[in-house]
Image (cartoon, rainbow, N blue to C red; front, side):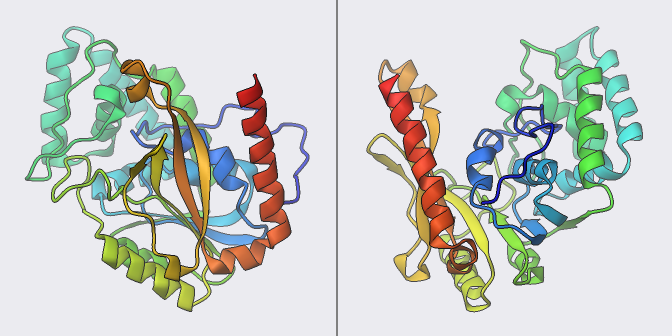
Length: 316
């Protein structure tokens, strides 16, 4: 990929990140964007979540437009408000944050109850900033039921304001937000676009996982990828992974002819707690259309740089 030399490298500045979300690809964004082609008309994120890849892409100016989709309606409403009404949302968040100090635990529960009734974006933002491990949880009725992290009171209003306005400046006027099934969202993509998909891992998502409002079925997802292949659409999928020799989830089928790449995600915190050292790797799959668009030379260059980095880290 051609390097864009600017006075301020976006990787050296603090990229805004208003929505804390467990499982966000924020820390892997630099590795993932290394496989982005030049000349992207629209970047699609049909499982938007924290939209970390969209934000990182916009910060580097790698796409002209952006398309966010998620089955979680309140999440998309929050993104719409962040992008289009940053001043109002920042003020609402600050007011809630200031009102919590008398009794943060009971106040959190009050806001949680109000959110489950009204689905207001500023309530959702406060809950995401305060809940345990930034981990969303829903009950069988689709109500937000995660507990508060009583060790902290959430992101400071000034910091949250900076994140909100930062994202709004990057995405306003360039972004379409949609609520619905990922299979509908990807139908809008054309040959000059790129789809980045980070669905719930099939290795951790059961019949009704409390982290997700919708279960993504493996066979349906594979059919969707085959449909995109038949139309020569470029896409990247973050899906399974491994910790040491332990594999998480099923790998995508070989007959999709995807290029499989492993990204080093760092030491496993769970293994560290058990007194063991194990590195976690996350899988990245590149579609045939994207591989042709990039060219093997670019992919080889990126992979060689990643290998050199790994060797340096091991040698250190």
